Amino acid sequence: MKSTTEKPEVAVTLGEDYPEIRESVRRICADFPSAYWRDIDKHEAYPTEFVQAMTASGFLAALIPEEYGGAGLPLRAAGVILQECHDNGCYAAACHAQMYTMGTLLRHGSVDQKIKYLPLIARGELRLQAFGVTEPTTGTDTTKLKTRAIRDGDHYVVTGQKVWTSRAEYSDLMVLLVRTTPLEQVTKKTDGLSVLLVDMREARGHGMEVRPLPAMINHNTTEIFFDELRVPVANLIGPEGKGFRCILDGMNAERILVSHESIGDAKWFIRTASKYASERIVFDRPIGMNQGVQFPIARAYAEMQGAEMMVRKAAALFESGLPCGEDANIAKLLASEAAWHAAEACMQTHGGFGYAREYDVERRWRESRVQQIAPVSTNLVLAFIAEHVLDMPRSY
Image (cartoon, rainbow, N blue to C red):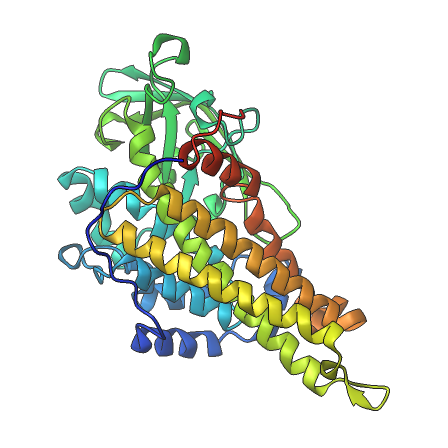
């Protein structure tokens, strides 16, 4: 096991931090009750009204610095926004990418790029919702991705395919990871990857095709095809060939932010299950009097509390600029499992009514399950911990 070195002190706040933000998010969520989300799910639609409300409130610009028109809030505050959305019955996955893609653009984008795009994003005139990394043949083996970008004067010519690129149909910009140097020509396999900021308004029909990809949950996901798409060299984020390191900031932020969503999911399931168990009368007594009903809910609560502390720690490390890969991955693992166990307890508590759409349990049960697969699977997190934390042999 790797020896630990002394790190600067990092404060992790306990209790309900950012109370004003939480209250504001709750007020927004109150305008989008369960019936709204059931209808969106039924028609596999995009929650445009909800996204517009979150944009108008300034919450989607939470991480953009004030000098570019944003709120300049820390990652924890952005996480709280997403957590409250999920805790109060809404589904923030429709717009959360605008937050975690900031990790790449803010830390590695040029001044010109920030001046050009960030104020427009902050005002809601542009949406940065798409994150093009995963491919159909390589999956999470990112270094072997096949989408190529070849330099041609002041443009890159992009050819390839991405899959599970959510919200691409409703985004103006996309952060795209491509290979600019073939894998066989680099010494280190993480080299030769580059990040491009694609203006999807110009790209559609001019070398880029977006196709919807229906799935078990209404995640508005797509597959994208690139056929000699020309992207200006000025849209290169960070140094050419060093994009893998740039994208990691976005990935760590993504893991931490979606972990907040899982905590919000867990809280909703636990509260919903506890209420139903206390009110549902069978055999002349509340079913919540039975330990077989109580214990799974109580255990889910304990797991959620532990996971939340890890989520807070990961956010604090990220904000302090300290290495947080281990903590972001563990937070993702624990939070997603806490949410799923809470979902299972809630579904089991409701019995047959858990399948009824009017109770919202089945929809949220479906939504919470995806967190153990995306944006990184539980098995890959465990492999990361085994290799990079415990110094065990690489398993893949």
